[in-house]
Image (cartoon, rainbow, N blue to C red; front, side):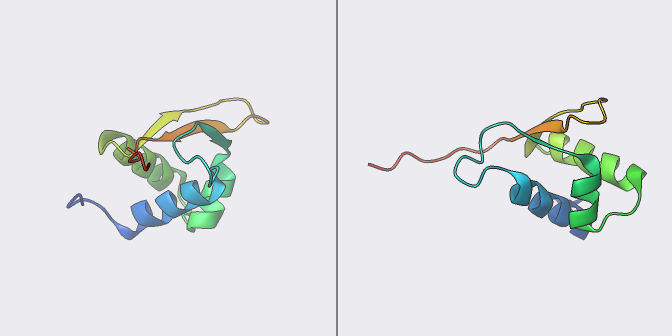
Length: 85
């Protein structure tokens, strides 16, 4: 795990997992910033954006922001799922 990984990173990751498709977490999903901030208990928009940037740099997620108020941001987890016979 990254040495610069804080509780806010973990809570944001948990929020992302919560709003992702649990049957296919590797697929792209849409979620809004307010939902993620509320679930992860992050109050500062600056902290939210810093943590998202860190998660992208650490290689955990792909992030495509949406500036449209009704459409959510697109997120995809970068994970390898082992093939089971």
